[in-house]
Image 1 (cartoon, helix red, strand yellow):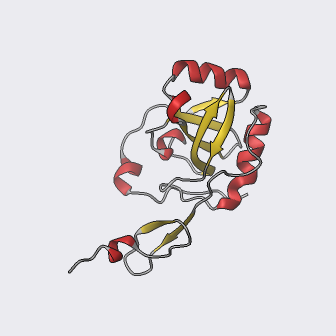
Image 2: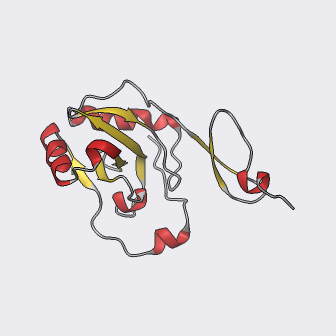
Image 3: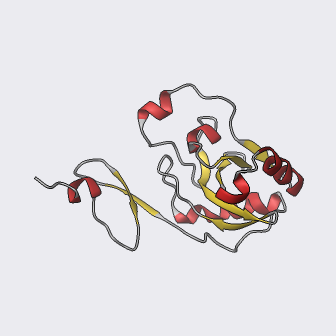
Length: 154
């Protein structure tokens, strides 16, 4: 499996960080985490799959690199819960830019924790770095346009 390094803004990478995201290795761990983070029941959570293949969760507005404790990851993205199960999950992380083919690492981490989830990403994204300006772009609807360039009104 591919290990993804953080490629987001250097200022975020270099700042001090606290504890990494909580390891969620069982449904009980998930329920305890949701009790401690009640907002996640409505707005979802940030997740990574760490290099050991464990699911780590952090509040939705957390940076993925903080959730990972600054380390490389097997996958990263966002997820939403309903009734103790994952109902939406993506690979949307502009810090790590994981490919959609990181799904097996996510599926394995969820299965190991016995957390029910969809059979694949409910939203899968492709990231590209513009060769002209080095900007990272999130590709949506097969629209491969560099936004900083597209927004140049000069």
